[in-house]
Image (cartoon, rainbow, N blue to C red):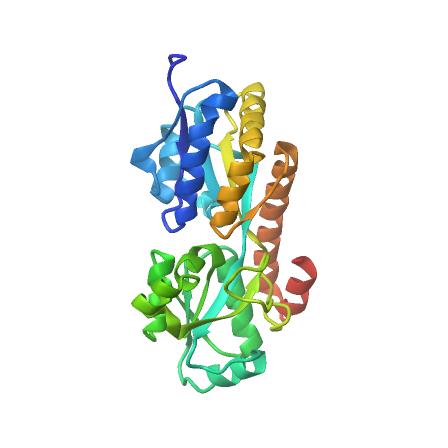
Length: 308
């Protein structure tokens, strides 16, 4: 490849608007810190698993970065290509929010349990993805309530919240940052019907949406969401180190930290080595929790002991 060929940044997360914002910001500053051209790979932008498959099959190993979340890592076993992805730099962490119709008076878990038992059918839960920790959480809630739960997935936070306001689902578990741009905007709430939605509890740093925590609501816990840049294991180690340093320098910029906070996400300042350790621990934790939940008769006690 010619030295003038740009670094390709792939953003596969089609249901997460913040992904594009973050990716475009890093594309802008990579030339300044790495001394190379960079571009967001438009054909695969927000293309979901297809984008990751493209990056694995066709992306030049020494020039391709992929922005992934903990949810996507759980799906990489289905990847046709054998390329292994190595975490380089954590970018942000995010909160989870549990939402319900505002017409329901639900001050605590006991009230929630009582209401769900009156619906006379499986509990309908709106999710951004029906895999990873949201799926585990739904399984834990099914055991905790003694009720059958069914998941419905939606393309965007707007669609998920609209489904809740329209009565198509009973509850929504979604990322607070994605939903807050609608729920936290009074004009948007009034115009689009979101005034009929309430946030019951959240996991993570306080947002404008809710004050109560999952622990206060006696709900199964969830780990914070996160996003990180990954590179191919085929990228030479010296090259990965140089790219990681550039990513870290961009992350520490005040405008990067402000941009992440403006998206209702939590900025982080982990170094590349700290980021790699964090992601690997999260991968092990996710797999062990899944295996444990499948065989345990009492998941909630163990879930609470394993997730902060």
